Length: 499
Ligand SMILES: O=P(O)(O)OC[C@H]1O[C@H](OP(=O)(O)OP(=O)(O)O)[C@H](O)[C@@H]1O
Ligand SMILES: NC(=O)CC[C@H](N)C(=O)O
Ligand code: SF4
Ligand SMILES: [Mg+2]
Image (cartoon, rainbow, N blue to C red):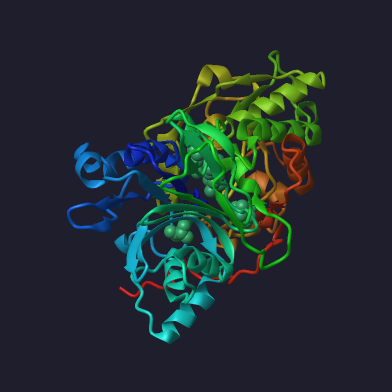
């Protein structure tokens, strides 16, 4: 397991566009925050000379910028009017295993097929055990490959029927982009765990995990792919007519369970996911934080300045603004300040084992603005505490700038349980809330703050539902242990690695 939660994967797909691979490349750039281990693009075209469909794939470890560092990749290699792309953060199958880099592309009796997956299959172990018994030779150690085996094993007549039959057998979290020789297929699991949006650009359809990938290519957001929806776009599809749409039956329950942590931390504030702007929802989390923990109820020191609220850039900027705005509305004095400066050249989730290295990591990523902090009552707003590494060392650094007092507010509840739906969390024992038996006073002492306050689980759901009025439900399992789809607890990411 990992040091802290890491992002989900980012996926992108486009059909019937002359610059399919290039637009996918730009889309992946915008989705870089969702996965930084590896990146890949697959395209599809009919080769007149060879009289067959070709599906070139370019994929490697690293950031999008490094993987696609040569223009010729687009001119000579990734030809075709349809493309899918993937940025990976591993949840099933080791991150260092090159076989796990997506998209996966295979050839079977119905032609070529490629897949990019964001999420984690809840019944991967059962499916893998079944295939192993049947004698299947696996090409990777990832859960995503199982979907391809299910498709190739299907005895249905058409490829589309095979895909639908395969998807009826998988459970858990999956937003998918798939490429067949002549079709782009976009899928969201019936629970709708992961986001996936439909857009159009130059009259062509495109899909992406987050709408910030549309903005970078000047595409227009049309709507979300609905939970359980399978969208099929062929070479004749043009974005003025509705794409073909099919629906999968939910295996467990009928409610949707969109990942609430997307709104708390993962998605970019300039994106729209689950039908609502992330910025709007995140500000509302700050507002509810102010309702539950108004600023003056925390302060204990008299200072000659207004208390200051600082965010931990960039992920909590928006929630901190919402917190300040609501306090001011309630007549409580405070102001938003930039008290921490972030070095943007340090990766989002740079893994560094060992305590000394973790401390160094926080120092490399942040520095304090002494003049802003000195003598003030400082309220730090962050979006989440996982292991407690960031908060502990940040408070240490802030204390060195001589504030009058330091309080820590979190715009989500304590994380008490891992995610099994597409995010890589530390084990339950490593989560800070569990290390301190969920005793918030003890956690405050460990972090070194005068007080520590969290948004309540009800506050979280209410804040999200007020900002996004859609009736769809949310997964809150990492905060509540209420898992909407049964999971195989304790299966390690590396469980299938043998070399
Ligand atoms: O308690 P911890 O284990 O330290 O993890 C919690 C921190 O991790 C996340 O930020 P991260 O540094 O991953 O990325 P960000 O820069 O996108 O906020 C989150 O926003 C918290 O600041
Ligand atoms: N974070 C994700 O969405 C991961 C997708 C897939 N389970 C993998 O590990 O490759
Ligand atoms: S467990 Fe947490 S991170 Fe995972 S899908 Fe549910 S809300 Fe999202
Ligand atoms: Mg952060």
